[in-house]
Image 1 (cartoon, rainbow, N blue to C red):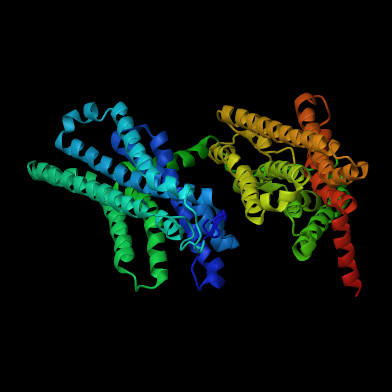
Image 2: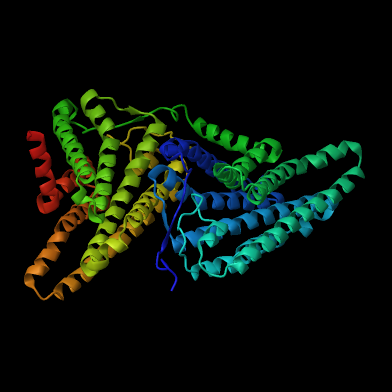
Amino acid sequence: MWPNESSNFFLLTGFPGLEAAHHWISTPFFFVYIAVLFGNGTLLILIKEDHNLHEPMYYFLAMLAATDLGLTLTTLPTVLGVLWLNHREIENTACFSQAYFIHSLSFVESGVLLAMSYDRFIAICNPLRYTSILTNARVVKIGLGVVMRGFVSVVPPILPLYFFPYCHSHVLSHAFCLHQDVIKLACADITFNRLYPVVLVGLIFVLDSLIILISYMLILKSVLSIASRERAKALNTCVSHICCVLVFYVTVIGLSLIHRFGKHVPHIVHLIMSYVYFLFPPLVNPIIYSIKTKQIRSGIFRLFAARRGSTMWSNISADPFLLTGFPGLEIFHPWISISFFIIYVSIVLGNGTLLFLIREDHTLHEPMYYFLAILAVTDLGVTLTTMPTVLGVLWLDHREISHGACFFQAYLIHSLSIVESGVLLVMAYDRFIAIRNPLRYTSILNNAKVVKIGLGIIMRGFILIVPIIITLSGFPYCRSHILSHAFCLHQDVIKLACADITFNRLYPVVLVSLIGFFDSMLILISYILILKTVMGIASGREQTKALNTCVSHISCVLVFYVTVTGLTLIHRFGKYVPHKVHIIMSYIYFLFPPFMNPIIYSIKTKQIQNGIKRLLSFQRI
């Protein structure tokens, strides 16, 4: 048997010796990642929306942008996880999958650049037959061939990684997984895994670069045979591609030379070159095409012109929105604000206390309380998102809110609502594991898995709402700008838009229905299985003890879903109900769960009670 063969995770590495500065280092990385996502995402949107760009050249450019996005999104979670959260553990399977995507997408990028050189060769050497040779069907076939080559050729060296024993140090040398890093830790015959990648990289990169070089030699030969006036125009169509090829292959060659001959070079240089290889081309490619390609520049100008033009629908479209308190009760707003202020303070104090206890009390450092902390943070987020405008309207009669601030508030409100539903779902999963499989509870729900689940919930909430919020910013608003609440909701804002809002009406209904149904059904199934397990326990005392650990969570689930159901029914069937009832139900939905959750856990959970007692006794001392 190999020693330590059973270990199922690796440790990622940031910048050794600079761990104290990781938070600062993460800032430029974060902005680079945002720039990469924004730049390549903009290219994809332009190529999709602008019919002038529906040509083979731009389809290949879209493939390049998609590849760069894939490469970026593959490394982003672990790099920022290490730099921000010092989260270094990665499971074996996740590590091998990441390595597979990284290496596959690198080969895909090389193939896309090769296909783009073929496109330029046909466009210049055989312009009259360009569209007949590079038909849409052929572009699709070339694209699929490039993708399949990249993803199939990497399977042989990645597949054995799942079966190797790893008995050396489990520390990898990067903040992401690479094949060459992982095989160094294997205690097995890795001859194939050493030779195959060298041959593969040599063949693919050398072959692709040679064919690209030959293509441009033939292009140059063709260009020199045409009139001098047309030469510059023909070569200009190749400049962007040539720049991207140079950026990619220069970084590849630089990284290869450092790895081959840089044994005595400081390790940090190897790290920097790796990050340059994975981040520099995706960052620079959209910039190159935006600067050097007239059609892309024109597309960007048209995009901004369309956005500016959308504000020309009427003279009032740029006016701020007007928030509404309690219509007909404006004279009582100062008095009503007192109760709201007390509720807001209670929510902040209650959830803040929970967070403080979970952070400071080591007896609460368990998955159940980590999820409770995420719930408290979500409740605080909802509260702090609505509090400024609600109290601004009730206290100061400050009703105006700019479009940007309104859309951002709506985005946070709806995103956090989805996050809260997700947190309640994973808390049900936590209780299911704790009761169904108590002996493996801490091994199944380890800290790494809790972090991943938490990030997954947050990403689900914040990503799913993006489409409808982005469209809001592009609509003209030519009707009354008066909203029906003291905060911005998507369903309020779209009523004021003078545009086709079919997508914005249907998408939220489908999204809320799916998430609400999916989450509530999984919670219900979890508790059916929990009840089945508890009924199998012989002792009635043990049954009660097991069920008591679920009471707090069940209460929070009921509070959340009862208010959601009540608000939905009022909106769906309450057309003739006074408007004040709609407003009151909205406030109950946004304030009652954050207000009640810390109270429920303080009353029903013994560990929280003990933590509060210890906190109060410490304060008295």
